[in-house]
Image (tube, rainbow, N blue to C red; front, side):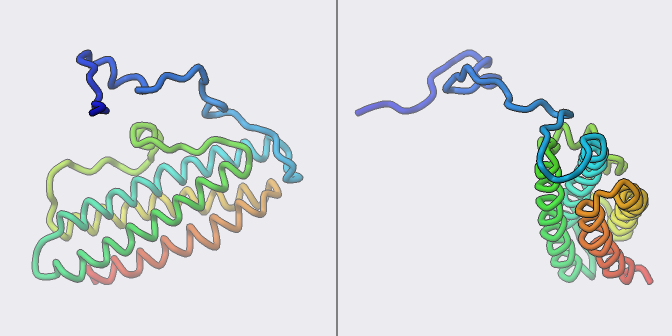
Length: 189
């Protein structure tokens, strides 16, 4: 019988692929490949930077929703548990849309958790469990961070003529975040 388990003893195997490759990354983060979108490279680069910022914050907000989904407690547990999970799924779908727009523009989307954490503008939450009122306040603060930067970035994209990016920011990101704020804020009214 053939043994297919990894038998390396050295911890260095955790830092390198099991099957080595001679290939390096095909496009470094922060670079732009020219695409025939009828957009100037400088405009596409500005949109990529803005979209990656929104992507990092959207992924952070999604993670915050999932954390609170797992850790919520109290008399409104069930409704908040379901609401937080629904909002998490919506933020994840939005993140996919933002990442694909970055790639469409010829950029490289931020993807790994450590890179997202480095780029995110949303204040870090504690590792421990918070009461529902603090969870809600933290979520509302995160939404406000995203909405403030999104409004400025939407205006910039429109002024530069990147209407595709403007459309995603306004029609998808701003509308979703405003709706989620409405659902969350109603728990403290």
